[in-house]
Amino acid sequence: MFPVGAHAATQTLVFRSSPIAVPAYGVATSHQLVPHPQVDGYVVGMKADLVDGSGNVVSPLDVMLHHVVFARVRAVD
Image (cartoon, rainbow, N blue to C red):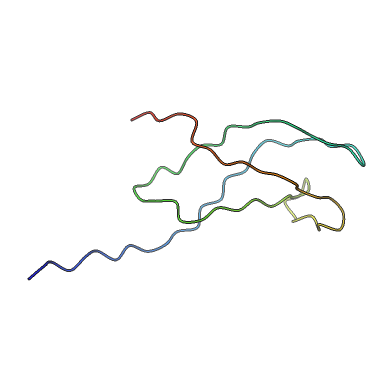
């Protein structure tokens, strides 16, 4: 007989980056470091939204987020 596995709850964590200014019809290329979750577990999904200065999601009819790369750049224990 095997012990019953633990059933962990899924958490939604939100991390915000610093503002990136993009002029009309412009292109912005940059990188930003965002802190990682300070909890034990696994990342099971990620997404990115563009928001205005008030935190409201910007419509893709107004601006296009073409590429986002999520990467673990440092592993410090």
